[in-house]
Amino acid sequence: MHLSVAYYPGPGISAQRVREELWHLHNEGQLAWSAKIFDSAIHLNGVLQSWSPQLLITHWHGDNRNAPSFDLPTQVAQRLRRMREGLNLSGGPYLVGQFSRMDSRFMPDQPNNLINDLLTIYDMLFCEAGLLTTLRNVSIAVWNHLSRAAGKSFVAHPFDVGFRAFL
Image 1 (cartoon, rainbow, N blue to C red):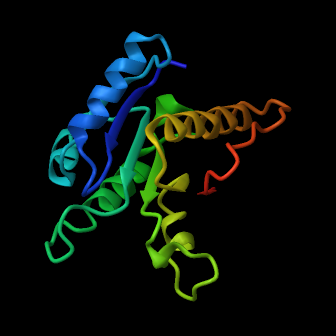
Image 2 (tube, rainbow, N blue to C red; image 1 turned 120 degrees about the horizontal axis):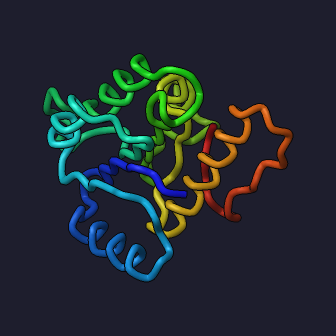
């Protein structure tokens, strides 16, 4: 599956390391995505003012909790969702939000968790995982989404065991 992808891995994750891992996967023939990796939420926002990828994967918040741009990635996803036309990827991106493993705001048993609110913006939320696991499971979600959108009768492909996702 060849896709144009915008990926902001979030604060605390080296965008350079992600670029290097993607380069290796691409050169080994394991990945056919054309991915732009962003160092900051501000950079992501700036580029996505004039470009719409087929897939957006972003940490749900930006770099600094006290900055006005803290929720910028979610604002970008909201804007792209409003502009999206239809359920296919040519009408706008499939929107994927990532959250940290230890973030109690994403524990389903916690009152006032952010899951339902963010699922009104993102098509999928997932708990951070290794890059290859993330890419494989996001691909599964996109494939299931496109199959459903095409009205095909299909058997949904399951996510990897232990991969925590909400759709």
